[in-house]
Image (tube, rainbow, N blue to C red; front, side, top):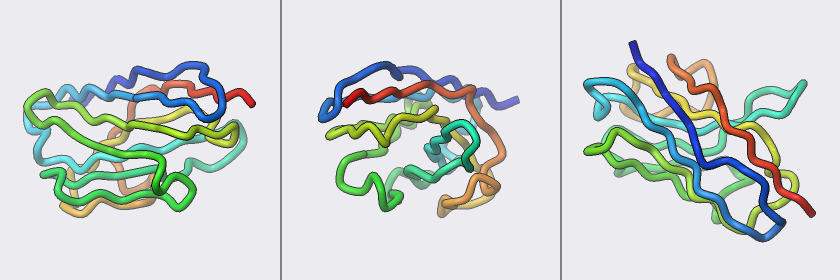
Length: 125
């Protein structure tokens, strides 16, 4: 059983920063590619960022490139998403996801087998 628990969401003003964290309860964390997605009510889940098993490769959605940074700590089984220069359009529920099947992480929600419960990020203008 793989469990993912996100934290770090909240309310921030435009231009501010937040750091999301996801703790993964699994014995073989280093065998999972990890991703962050976000979703607004009534919309499809949007790819935000992903990181490979080793952390050596990272990928970003076009709307967050240059503002968000994904990282992982394999010793602590955690993945983080550092967000700066936040905009009101970044307001969403953010989800952490894990993929056991690919060394190179995917950009689609269906590439990931396990999901956290989500954490709300609200950016006020």
